[in-house]
Length: 303
Image 1 (cartoon, rainbow, N blue to C red):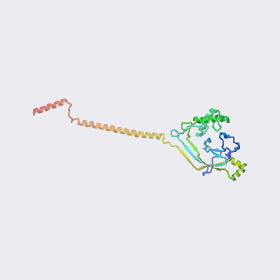
Image 2: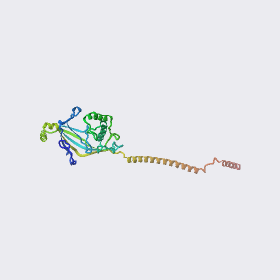
Image 3: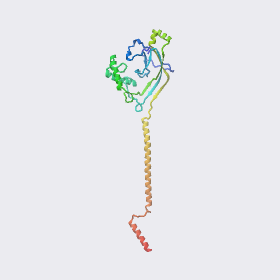
């Protein structure tokens, strides 16, 4: 992109810097006289909407872009925030989720493809902002079919996000750039004269059409937020096995000790009975009882 906001094709590599604050300076000419948007439909702003996104993802401006009005200078400080989400059941990501028209999976890209499928089925065309190979919708079909279709998709929840079983689950890895934006009026008197002479435009045109944006890193550090598994499968099995082994081991030891106690007492009782059996009178032997009675009678007679 050049200084006046015209997109140019460039194979230049990303610039490496050793200090924060050295970023991208952009100067846009919005050319308000060429605006064709209808104010009655809500298009009442004049300025630049931009988005800070990962180079691996496409920008998304639907309600998420940053707006800088004409005649303003925006200073944008960014930080890199990387999020790593675990797959289900530890997190809500699905590693096997792929997109057809995006190289890298993202929630926004998934929503775009989901909406594109429904709109192409209902309207037979695609808005230029959605991915796909269908015919581009003209202005009449855009207002008569695309708008109602988008409203129907949102009201019926046909394209859901967030959970692992939704249409568009959370990405397993995502890079965001939180921004801090400050504004000031663009151009003092000397700057207005300078740009008027350089661009061959009137000072009033400069104030009504130019937007200046500076984008730079707030610092050279970055932040990583990573979900951790509380228990992996191996740790869970080891934990359950250890608890089960401890429980079963304690139970078996208790059972063995109880059986040992019963058997020991039984053995001692048997030994006691065997040792005491010869000394006990034979009350249940009739012949022995009769002989004993005769002996007693004989002793009495002898006496």
